[in-house]
Length: 248
Image (cartoon, rainbow, N blue to C red):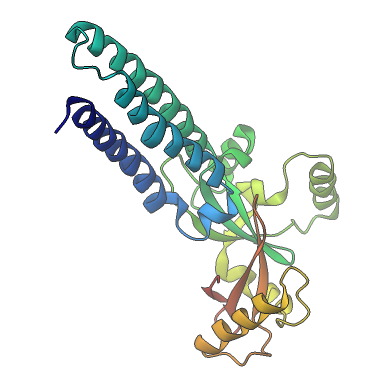
């Protein structure tokens, strides 16, 4: 095997292994469907792959001249690897801070909450007042109910904060409650497929098929909106139990 090709192959193998380990760990822990889609991380992942699996090994292929002194070659490849490592570390931290941490039923939908969406002050209040449901740095995604408090003044304050770009109730762990406590309210907001304005005709037909495959009548009120940073999705909910059975 030519020297350049061997250097390229080794660099590609090392870069691919590092990328798979990082993305695999994040996916298995936090970004499983629908997390990766709702968090809208496709651009970050594509950039990571472009730098670590494409650009780095290609640069090695270009500079790996067998006539170049070994010290000089090692220095050049070292610089490439250092730049790759810096890019990988930056992208990994971006994915870590934006990892899905909560799926919160609130009002008329289910909303994705990323780790970076919860202010440090709210996290501290949650740990103090609601430690069982407040996420920690190591927590994997959890499904909760996040409803406005009964006190009208406090509820209005939270709504005004959300309208002005501040924290909403879904980013306030002190108000998190077990998923089951919101089932009665959730049932009232379940809808049928046809009125959904976020889906085209073909998507509606596919969703009706998924409903049928899950054992529901196609015109059954069993859908609710799921939102995040990306385009919204539709969840199929078993109205009897209140559990999400599919997110096509």
